[in-house]
Image 1: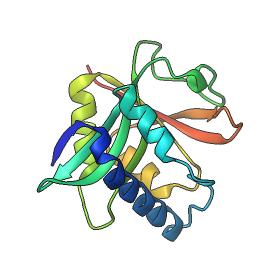
Image 2 (image 1 turned 30 degrees about the horizontal axis):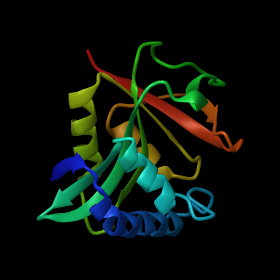
Image 3 (image 1 turned 180 degrees about the horizontal axis):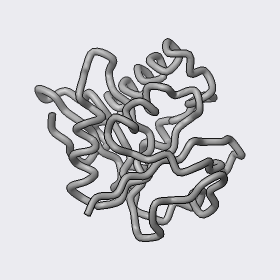
Image 4 (image 1 turned 120 degrees about the vertical axis):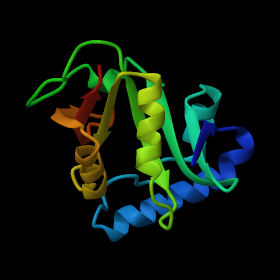
Length: 162
């Protein structure tokens, strides 16, 4: 699986991936995350413009998407019921999505992320059990609760390497 920077021509395929990811969420009982049109095409365009949007390709086809954003993440400034593993610089991964028939996307994202930074933070919805499982499987530690700008609660995770 190839990871590369997303470009504007990828937007239709990215939106297909994100819609498929919403379907996976709903089928697994996660009805509270990625609602009301989020993530919108405008959000993806913003990621691409900021050069933080990435696609995963398999056989030349876009099969996954994520945003890889350098710190600081404003909503991570306050964490409740725990603490981050360290106070150093980090990258945040947001908006992970993949087509349902494709496997290994999360592992490919982690390989890419840890080739770029030693500290990665991610947050997820309490009902996103698939993401929580992947985070635990890939060595992330639960650190506490953060709140999005909207006030919505998210479970916060971090993994660091030496």
